[in-house]
Length: 315
Image (cartoon, rainbow, N blue to C red; front, side):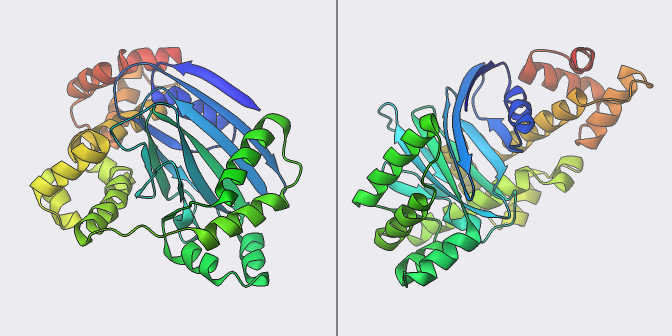
């Protein structure tokens, strides 16, 4: 299956993916309209997808209770900036990330990818994979899978995995077992990247920042920068630097954008037309932490190019 679409805001993209059973929240980290394409194939115990986007996107909420989601990137053009992050692991041309999904709860995973690469995801059944690793006594693979967020692989198995996925996305998955064999080889041969202590702290903060930004409690009662610093046990200067470096915006701005997008999603799904649009907008604004309807409307218009009332009328 192949999907290609142009969108005016990332909620259109999220809603389209939700119709396909992919409940992933997406925050676009730069302004403007974008394009998105996805090739997808699945069989028993294996699901693969390749994604390309013209804008830098932050994906939050992917991950299931049945699978481990291995990820890799394919550079499309040269870039001086990192191509992306998977669970906080910087993705390079030889990286495989997503290993942390074996330990995370469904919907708690995240990734950020730029327009300079495509991102491929390969979902394998957890139970089948673990049984396979134990059966061949792949102890290094088990350790890498259980304790690491990602690995770098300079091994022929990684190249074979990429070629297999590329072919199967156009022709369909025929030999699902090959994915388990190749992933096992990659996990067994992959090298763990060594970070400085300060870098590890920054990577840990990334996940906390993403989770905090999407917290329902924070959306209803927005935190001040001082509150955020206390919650994350980080100074304002370091927190600002990390957010600017990885997301291109401050954490308060990022939280604001996520709340605006969630409020837009609520307006698009509005089904009770018995009350006035004004009442609906006021209730939605308050639900997502905007106490003043007029200011909410102005910020909404800046982000989406239309007023909340126009969103309701067009829903």
